[in-house]
Each structure stands twice: as C-alpha cells, then as structure tokens.
Length: 371
Ligand code: ATP
Ligand code: FE
Image (cartoon, rainbow, N blue to C red; front, top):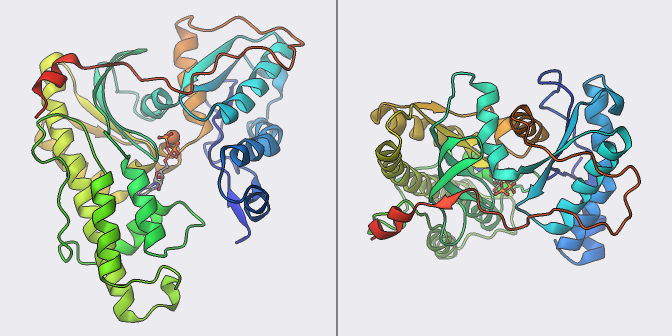
C-alpha cells in the first residue's frame, strides 16, 4: 500500500532455539504520512514513535511465526548499539521486560557484529579468523574478525557510507523511494551504460583501507543538474531519452561506487593475510550486500586473492532480527550474558545503551601506511 512504509529498523529479536525462526518476519507497517506531518520531516522523535508503535506487535508476530510463547525462551538478545539512543531504548526496554518477567538471561548485541556473524549461521564452514566488509546505510567497514568479540578495524569511511550514496542517488534521480534507494538504483542501472558518465573513483591516492563517498555523491548531483533531470517527474512519466539519461547516471555511479569497494577490499585482504595468514573467507554483509552487482564484483576480487566469498541472502543482509538472535546465541554459548533484570523494573532505570560503539580497535599500522 503506497501510504505505508515498511519499518525495517527494528533491532529486536528473541532467542528461543537456533532454528524455527523465519527470517521473513512481516514487520508491521506504520502510517508514514501521518508521522511525517506531525514531525515535519524525518526526525529522531518520529523514529522513536514508530518503534514504540510497533514493538509489541513485532515481537508477538515473531513468537507466533515460531510457534512459541515467551515462556519457551531460553534467553533474550537485543541490540544495544550503535544507533539512535531513542530507538535503542525502545528495544532494550521491551527485551528487559520479557527477560525480567520470565527470569531469563539477557545478551546485549552490537548491530554491526550481528551483520557480520549472521554469515556463520548461513555458512557453517566459516571459522575465525576471517575478513568482513560491512556495507550499509551508516557504515562502511573493513574488519578482521580474529575471534568472537575480537575484531580489528582495518578501514572505515571518512564521511558517508555507500548505502547513503545509493539512497541520495535514488532520491536525486526521482526514483520510487517506497523501498530504500539501493534496490531502485540497482534496477535502473541495468538499463544504463556504466561508462557513459565519467565519475572519479574516490581516494585513489590513499594507500589505506578507508572509504569516502561524499565526493562521489557531489559528482552525481552535479551530473544530474547538468543533464537537467527533474526529480519531480517520476521515472514512469519521463520520456525515453530522459529515462536513458537517468539509467546512465545510475549505472555509472554504481560502477564507480563498487570499484571503490573492490580496490579497498583487495588491499584489506593483503593486510589481513599479513596479520592472520590462515584467513580463508571474506564476508560481505549489510544492506548494500543484497546488490547482485556488488556481490559479483567482489566475488572476482576474492577469487583473485584465493579466498571464498560468504554473502548472506538479501533478507539477512539488510536489517533483520535473526542476525541479532544468532549473535546473542554465539555469545550465550560462551557464557557471555547478563543476569535476568528485575521483574518490575522502574521506567527510569538506567539502561546499558551504546549509541556510539566502535566494532574493534583501529589497526594501528594501517594509520602509518596511509597515503
Ligand atoms: P547501519 O547498518 O549502518 O546502521 P542500516 O541499519 O540503516 O545501516 P541496513 O539495513 O543494514 O542499514 O542497510 C540499508 C542500506 O542498504 C540502505 O542505504 C539501502 O539503500 C542499502 N541497500 C539495500 N539494498 C540495496 C541494493 N540492492 N543495492 C544497493 N544498496 C542497497
Ligand atoms: Fe544495519
């Protein structure tokens, strides 16, 4: 329904068993227009209200689909960061209330660790140490996962993440934003000539594993202005010529955005193998890893380096509760969890939220090798 938008950012899930939980939860829909009108745009308070509106329903739906009740649970896992504290709080309160009522242990999960470790749910061969490229709306990370909870950050973005660049490109090209921008750009790019617009690959001169997408975003915006594309006219109503111009920009953007990933991944694999020669896999996860072109190009890089690519299915790459449940379970199995919270916790109890929470230490030698 065009008046509704899928609320995909619910980082909450229960951990009853390993299996039996569908990754395709039908997350409830909220009336975006109504919330937008009330807040005058997307605002943290709006995101908070959206979470609060659906939290009970989404948890119930998860339990129903797994044919379980709260009483059947063994533990509760919940994302405690990084992210917007207003939204994290909603999930953590709910998790604590379930755990408190049933005397269950609680596992606080790192959102990006969850994007990484879900790969171990789908690929049982995947052992530590391994490399991971995490590409999503807010992150662009190259990680060496040495062991559970032991990560080294080889690279990150110095400004925007690739998902943000996809989303803005979609918006400026006037694409249908009912889904997120990434899939819309990917689809349109298939009709375009990827070499027709000459965008510069970011950070060519930097000999490190960091990323930058702000400059590419600006290049795309200027190209759209130069071609006088009117984002107010939908793709469906645009002329054939205009549609082709939009597709050419989408394809050219995608080629360069992904080339940037390829170059940095290649270097990161070299760094990673120097630190841990037994690495066999590169995990690619996060929303952007659902993209077929991204997967195909990175598969080439990984093969050239003698490794294997592990890329979870799209439903587990974009935000989902299964990845949080699985990561909770990985920690739980090693005895890393908190005791049950009190059964009747006061509303103003201090919660362990980590809105800013790096995944592992920065690689020190990487800094000196930069440039
Ligand atoms: P983060 O994980 O950094 O906090 P997030 O949780 O908002 O960000 P995810 O759900 O992990 O994001 O990823 C969403 C991002 O992935 C959006 O920017 C979206 O455009 C992008 N994305 C999803 N599918 C595709 C696709 N097929 N091609 C390119 N980008 C995609
Ligand atoms: Fe995410």
